[in-house]
Image 1 (tube, one colour):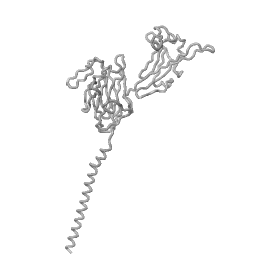
Image 2: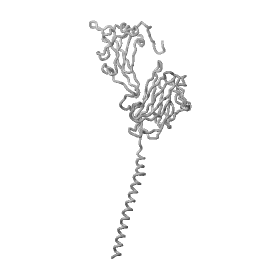
Image 3: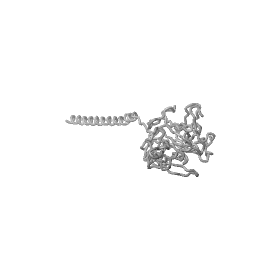
Image 4: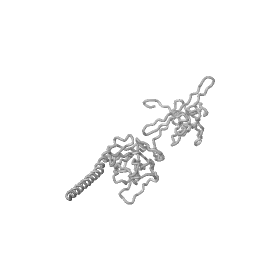
Length: 361
């Protein structure tokens, strides 16, 4: 009993029309597949044979599988066959993409009546947009997000670029920033919030979306958790926050905007991150002031890679016109004055010759 409603739950091995099905049905959301499985006894209770189970496309049938001695009815589709099997149109927002399917049974007809219920189980899988290093094209980001597995817990990490030092407004499209202006970056563990400690190990900029590509130029911002670019500084928004790397579940830092010497001038930002348990401050604290660095005590730290880009460089029109004024016009003026002097000297010489000839006559 609860305040708002009654709830009925059957013990293991028993099934009923009013019982919650969560214990009997499992949805599996893999990196390249979507699956649903339910224990065989659940379908036997409802008198639903395996042959009648299918996805919206009847050619995508369920299969019987035995796992640890327990028999299940299971349906698995890859992301490539999702639409073929009748999956709903993909629902997307700025950070996630949702797949939705339904496993259903054909009616069991007896004469001209149907006595047993038709089973229809709707299920969904929600995936974060994970920036893949194999993408051959730039992703215009609102944010970049990834999921890191820590023991039995999934942690979601997000990287955003903000418009100013207050970190209140994130860019909602590919940002365009002038040279030498500050770039404000925030990396946060959003789920579970305020639990893990977060450390940025390496951060660097590239000319291509691929973080480890050998093509194009590379510029390091952070290395081994320490500042590599002299313009980089860690930022705290409030006095209660720490501006140190690895001290909380959010790391904020800024650097001065630059461009590469060769085209393309756009930047792609990449950061490798490490998660530490709340009491494991030693693993998350980089040793930046000592020569000998002590490695993290955690044997296999949970790590991940985040990428963001492109970040475009804005070149103002003002310096170009001033360059024209400072260089081109003075040079043109020198040539004009020189040409005038040559003409003046030529005229003077011609006048002197005429005067000499007149005197001789």
